[in-house]
Image (cartoon, rainbow, N blue to C red):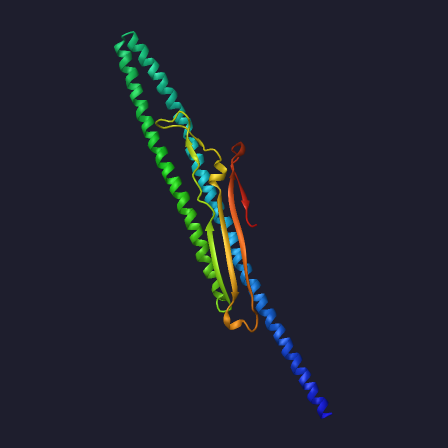
Length: 243
């Protein structure tokens, strides 16, 4: 009976050790899964939200720029009409008519110069906003990842890099007439040039002190892109959150 008791105790002790080992392994496996899931969800949601806001702001700037086309068109036509009136007045040697037409033409040129300045300031600000916010998005996600990873730093070593796949462009140009205060239009392949596309790579492994419990090394990759749909001037957003 004594021998049996000793064997029973040994068996129970062995089972307890096995159960404890399994429990600890499950705990660390769960911790890894939670940590990786938190990282991935943070990157994916932040990328989509920030990129969508940035794309919406960019399209808003484009709408404003394009809304000025009606004024540039009116000025172009007015200048053409004033030039014809000036030529006719000069041909008939009508000095008062020449003076009146010349005054109107000068006023139209001043208005055109003023509109041209407004357009150029808007273009500069829109391009600067696009690039600044684009880089700020990358910095925000890379910084936020460190905060998300901090509770797990003792168990998991993470190397994370969120980078742009390309730099977006404010893809508009002056129309074929060009000149001062032109009409603006989309560049060819504007959707592709305006697309915000990012890649996230994370490599992770168990910290040295936990190798006896769980030894794990892996990597994941996430891509996020937000592109405008410019067909039929609907200007909707197309989101690819993960692939």
